[in-house]
Image 1: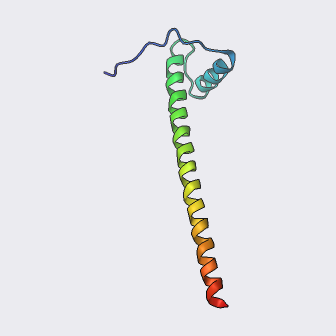
Image 2: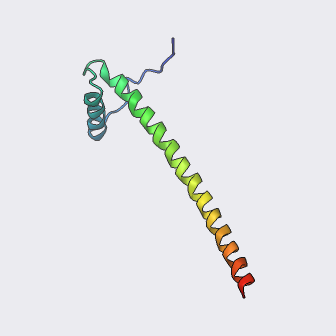
Image 3: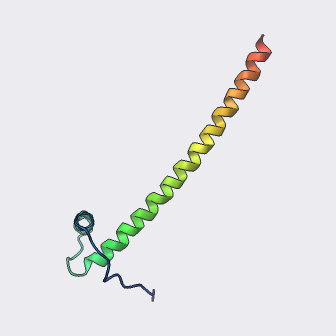
Length: 82
């Protein structure tokens, strides 16, 4: 069985409550016991989107390097044509 940390003292602001209720209705979770599952779903989504941000940053750096290599190759080709 997985151990868990209680989150009873977590403050939920109105905008957060709207998100939790949207997740609960999307996944058809009950009002009484669905909030903890909604928190887990929200955290999983956050983790997934964080990984996407890291992938985008990595791909952006790779694209920048490839553009530099293309510019260098273009310069070499232009030098050979003349």
